[in-house]
Amino acid sequence: MLIQYIIGPAGSGKTTLIKSLVEYLQEYNQEISVVTINLDPGCRTLPYTPDIDIQDYVTVDAVMEKTGLGPNGAMIAATDLMVNYVEDLKYEINQYNDPEIILVDTPGQMELFSFRNSGPMIANALGFGSVKRGIIFTYDSTMCIHPNGFISTLLLAASVQFRFANLSQINLLTKKDLIHKEKLENILKWVDDEYELASATENLEHGMLRELTLSLGRTFREFGAISELLPISAKYGEGIEDVWGAIQRVVNDDTSPY
Ligand code: GDP
Ligand code: MG
Image (cartoon, rainbow, N blue to C red):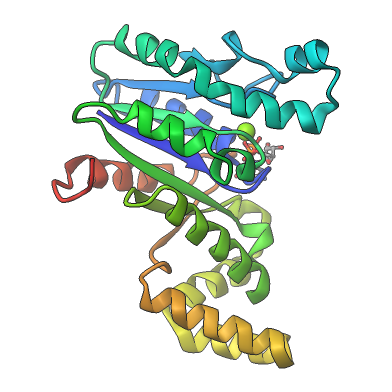
């Protein structure tokens, strides 16, 4: 069993990706058993029907009503409260017959899940027995058009890597249909070649920011944090087979940590 947590900035397409992955599997790969879990306590509607939904246990609306907190405070409280239901989630997972893949949708605002304690705690608690765990990080292509936006998303991806230490990470460049082909190619070049990122920063940025961008790019490359970035459009179902291929590689990789 592999549990894949989908993590990324708000609106970067995590939920739409799950919808698209599930549709792809239904169409092309029906032998593989997949279970979806929604861990976003604040989404009123979802474009797919999760098999397991944290909102059966805790919702932002209920927390607001009970505590009088506003939407932001209630979102934080509801995300923290999710850890109380880990045993229920495990019980529900066990009702399925050892599924091969579990796709986990996480709260829109990634910092609530990744940088507070609840996310890593839930990820640890669900990693029982020989369950493998991994992360899919969604880079929003509209935020990565400029080198500084690209680098700041990279910083987020790297901090998620720190928070969920040792988990494999698949990096996706989402919403590719929303940016021009040349821009997309630029971003992919920045990933492949540090000189491309350096020359882009030369054109676009100056002074301290440029120096910072360059040295961060260099550091990430040295630590292997800049790795393959798969461009996809979950909305139009493009590149989804590549995501599936990357998930399969994690499943079959015996060196990947449990
Ligand atoms: P989340 O907050 O990361 O779960 O993001 P969502 O999946 O809810 O997506 C946020 C918005 O971006 C929604 O309006 C989606 O329809 C839209 N979106 C997601 N993926 C794509 C895509 O591949 N292309 C386009 N054009 N829009 C997308
Ligand atoms: Mg979402």
